[in-house]
Image 1: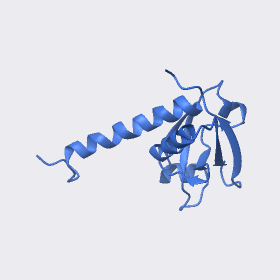
Image 2: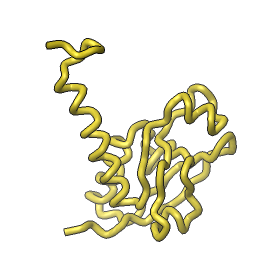
Image 3: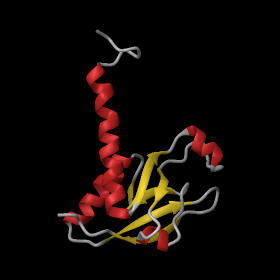
Image 4: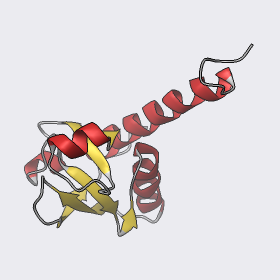
Length: 128
């Protein structure tokens, strides 16, 4: 049985689960929820059509990211100087930093049409 867009049904189910896991990893490590940057968000945020990154969809009030001034709608362009275009890439960059023994990550963040800025954000303690 084929799916409506011609993809294997198992592939369609895998992608949302993978993105959900990545979003949860970012939420736990940084206190933020991430979503892919879509054309609609680019238009809403007045970004260039070729802008890349992941969007902060939610932020924990008591997170270090919130204390550093990050907000819902901000676009994370890179983490530790590695371009980040999906929540999974963000989770991988945070995981790599944690495995390297770091307790912070450097985010390159854009808000609207303004220039990108660099923000150091502490990683939350890992839950055992």
